[in-house]
Image 1 (tube, rainbow, N blue to C red):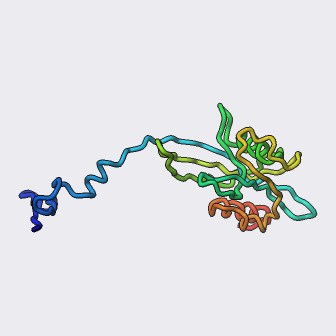
Image 2: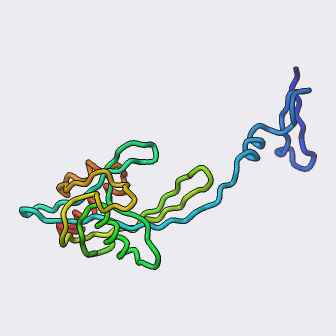
Length: 185
C-alpha cells in the first residue's frame, strides 16, 4: 500500500494523509471528536467547613468519613448542598450539624473552591463555600445525616487534621483556619 497526501489548494495545512484504498478519508482524531458527546453542564453549590471545639486549650475539628464515587472511604470536611432559599452560611450550619451532630455558628468565610467532574450523562461544575464555625452544642454522631453519606465522625486535633483529609483543597483550608486561630497571616 502506498500513502498519499490529499492537500488543500488554498491551505495545504488542511490536507490529510491516507493510505490508498483504505477506509474513510478522515483522520482518526476527527472521528474521535465526532463520536464524543457534548455533555450538558449542571451547576451545584454546597457549603460546610471547619467546626472547632477547644478542649483542654487545644482546637479540634470535626471531620467525617464518607465513601467516594469509587467506593473508597475517605476523610473530609462536612459539607452539602444548599436547600431552597438558604444562604451558604445557613447551609454550612445545617450540613455540619446533620453530618457531625454538632451545632455551631459561623465565625467567618474561609474560602470558596470550585471543581469539575463528569457523570454518565452530564458534567458538574461544583462550587463549595467553606466557613470557620464555632461548636456550640451537640454530640458527635452521623445518625442525623438524612443522606446517610457520613459513615463516621471524629474530633481531630486541628494541627493533625490536614494529614487525615483526602483532598488537598480541604487540607489547605484547615491550615488556613489554624493560622487564623493562631493570629498568623
